[in-house]
Structures are given as C-alpha cells and as structure tokens.
Image (cartoon, rainbow, N blue to C red):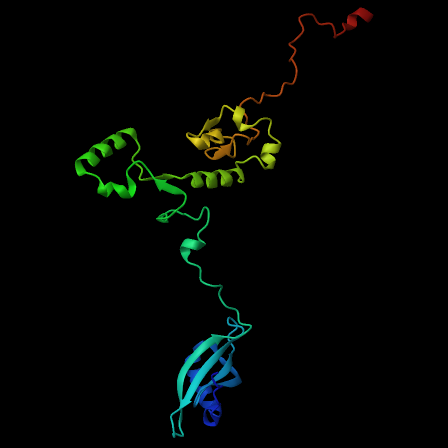
Length: 256
C-alpha cells in the first residue's frame, strides 16, 4: 500500500507565489480566492484558486509548486486551469463518423462508407477477388459487366434493404400518419405512383404528383394523400339554362 504524501510546509506556505503565477497565466480569465492546497509528492504541492470568468463556472486554477531537497526556495512547476466537481464541461468526445446522422450530408460533404458497412455487399465486379483473376479473362468479364450495367463494386445488402424499408415505413411516406388516415385512397391504386425496381418495389414507389407533398420522394404502397388519381371532382348538380317559355313573369296589362 502506497503511503499518502506528506504536505511540505514550505510548499504549503507558498500561497502568494502560486497566486502570482496564476495571475500571470490567467489573462482575462481572472483569479479568485484560494481554495486549498494538496500534497502531490515529497516536497511537491498543488494550490487551487477560483476562476472568476463567468464562462467557466466551477473551474479553478491549479498551481503546482516544488522544493528541491535541502533547499529553502519554492519554485512554480506548472499552472493550469482545471474543472472542479461542479464545473461545466464539454460532453465526452465522439468521433465525427459516429456523430453524423440521417440527412446530415450537405452540399460539399463527403461521407465514404466503411469497409465493413453491413448495408453493402460486393457486387458483380469481382470485389476483392478481382486482382486474383487472369488479366485477359477479367478484361472480358468487365466488358460484359459494363455492357449489362452491372458495374457496381458494391450493392445493397439484405440488411441494408431491411434498414431502408423500416426507415421509410416509419417516415412521412409511410402509412402511420394523418395524411394517410384522411386520404381517399392509398398509393397502391394511384396512377401517380411509380413502383421501385427490385425487392423494395413490393413495398415502395416514387410519387410523381407535383401537387402532393410526397412528390419526388419514396412512399409506401399503403401510404396515401388527397391527390389520389381516382378522386373525382365534386358535382354541384345540373346547371339549368334559360327557359324557352317564360312562365314566371306577369303582364300587368292583363289586370287593367
């Protein structure tokens, strides 16, 4: 068991020396009252002073002083501003790649996918095995792949499709919202919906109705809005023309 360091009296008495060092270092942050002294090691102690800057509540100045063996003079070793128990501190650092969320990509933002991204799997280009193929044979395969439009090295995985489907169903283009509940019909029967290709097409399509809030976005087949293609215009009855024989007006000369 390591014994606690004994506070050196000369280091403990060096309050004015530590305060002056903190003032020189503080600049506009200010140095307040002396908060105490703690022994760090043999003939090494740290004095604490309050920080008076309003932007750093709970922070304090830490001034470490030391005295050499058999020496009487105490010298300043280090001056820092450190957070106290009640200090306002920044949250733990989170890498940018973990902080970014849905919709955070802006114009000019580059976000390459991770090598082990579960949303993607190797496509028809050969992936990591491409370098092991015979150059001539691989050149022919690449030509066929390019002609068929299958030249993507990575394609959406099953897990990636499931994640997208779950996200879309829970979004504004899904079935669980007031727009759908008040719609006269669902997108499944709307002429403005263009189904997606592939497996996602069984559940989703793109809206092409320029008057719909979903125009140009993905909607589920059971989504709906008031712009359904089968909605009929309201009828207000038949507009009657001018009668051929006037049966309403009265000739006043008949009663003379």
